[in-house]
Length: 416
Image (cartoon, rainbow, N blue to C red; front, side):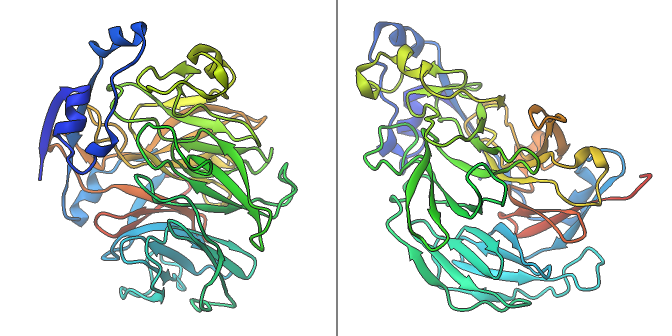
């Protein structure tokens, strides 16, 4: 189905999305906000995802010297990667509720077998996956499991590590990462992203819209950072050890608000959602007052602002720091981010991979378009909704596209 619709803010919520209408955007509650209500419109442009065709590869654009090929296809709902110490590539499939394994033993940049090799199953909503030595951690919407790995594609039956994550609601895609040695937290913590249950509301569960962390044995569970609507991609800068993540802004605030946020994630800080966005701006469409008896402005001034922002509704998903040895040196310690693509904007945004450039001191400088062309604007269509990212053992960049079940591979050849 291909369609374009533009309605008033509240009207779209109620008319265009029957299943989501329970999460209605309320009328603003103060005088200043009432004025804004007449100027903000929400737009829904849902692009049709076309079936994959290798001819579409010619539409993809990269910087000079880079090329893209299909690593594997016909894989189903591939979402998130983890690369084992021996180079075996594990991928979660959320809709299928399983984990598959891929290899490239001959190093030709294409998966060895076209067959789907399921290595774990019966894991509804499995999404996040990360290795720590010979153990692999997996996250579903409400639970985290751990399995043992020895070599190749073999994994033991997963054991439940923790349960009781907040009900998934609107954002069920939990992701995982283990802090490295030398990180400010000392290393060895398992971090778990927990998106919000709704678009914009006051959450009843304090663990919703946060990043939580536990010890690797599941003990000492604690909220690390709060006020994060849906931070899916995150990771530690390889040099500074700072933790960075991309957070999704709320829907139905107009074409250009709120922007997607790059946040330096620091323990015990609050990043503002649902009461604030962007540079500590109050979200006047939240009817409940912020906690603590503070007014909106005063509350937002106490929250952590983003370091950089990106085009609204682009939907950042995967994020990975480049630590391979194939790309030019200037890419080392920069990050790649998968912008899945908008639906809540009159001019679509995202549908691309961007490079997040850091300076020599490990501070973020700018976003640069890296891989684009998945959006076919003249047809209001796309041929790929990008999701997870990984650095392959040969230093290439792997990109999971879950609508058509394709894994793309970006490589660099010296001299172009």
